[in-house]
Amino acid sequence: MKKLAFLAALGFILTSNVFAQRTDRDYNRNTAYMHERNSRPYRASPEEIAHRKSEELDRRFRLSGSQQRKVEALALRTEREKQDLERRDRMRGIPEYKYRKEMQRIQNDWEKGLRSILTRKQYDSYRDRWN
Image 1 (cartoon, helix red, strand yellow):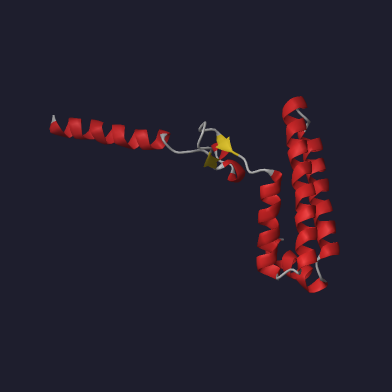
Image 2 (spheres, one colour):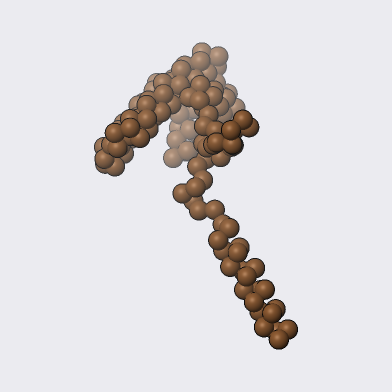
């Protein structure tokens, strides 16, 4: 009887851990924080994301002042385009292939703009690091 009770308790514990795991679908890097006021996921604004990107690139590649301003402006434009695309997708339900094509275009514009801002050595270092 003790063995049966022990096995039942062990089975309950093991199955409860299986159901308590978070799936990858529930987790998104940009919405990982919970907003204090209403416990909804907090998504950083395009300005915050652009500022973080420019700081990261400045820290990694020692950008000049003008380079940092240009990178932040480019990152802000890129993040606003991404946010606009996501908003249009939620409202209209853009087909997956069109969404991917548009996101790829935004990413290519980011790369092209970054190539024009950074020096050749900085850009080669960036490509080695992130690609």
